[in-house]
Length: 281
Ligand SMILES: [Zn+2]
Image (tube, rainbow, N blue to C red; front, side, top):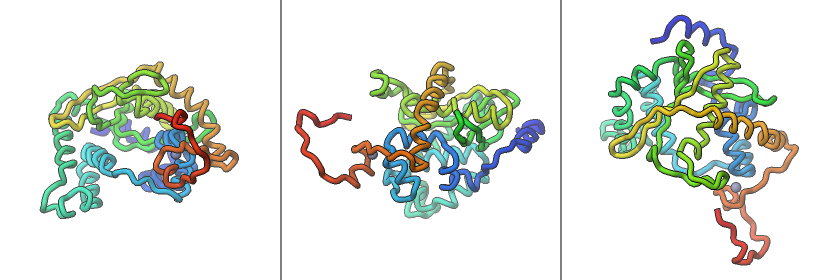
């Protein structure tokens, strides 16, 4: 249930982004975001080529669509119906709703049910959905979109789908195993959102991740994010973003990582490498 207070605070917010322009290429040039920051950290050359429209990543869109399917369901029934109407080819067998959903989305329905039938989840996941926020981090404009924001309870929630909540992931940077949340940078995302909410709406909110797994019987968890991790990630942004800005402005040349799809697709053989020096990733 939306209360009048919440609607008022959101209406008077000074956000310039809305659902029509949030994902536009123009706004990706103007604002930094967690998605694009991560792309630039992973490979500057690929990120810049994609931002310029010279390169389209060719990974599977299914995980993204499964996430959107779930998000739109918990946004409201109208949002979910428009999502179904917009993606018949991807969602339904033979692109025909009468033939039933493809297996990935039957699985997504199981994830939805696991959350929807949980009283605690339903009580927790209340507030304004898909709220765009923006602000400035260390002199650079940033944008974000909050899955579920409740200014009355001073909390915001982000829904995440994951293969297995308890799987370990190797972090080369930390030389240690970390959780899915750290390896995917969700601690950074929550730190950014917390700051942007504060700047857009003037309220300090606590972030929670609601994770639901893609296992046959979905697992679920409500996760909090320690402050030290969020502080560390904000420092990382402060350190790394000047270079990204310089690349976007054309002042610095992007470095190639030499192992992503883009780098392999545009590779020119130049030198000979000893097998002693083949790099491991
Ligand atoms: Zn690369």
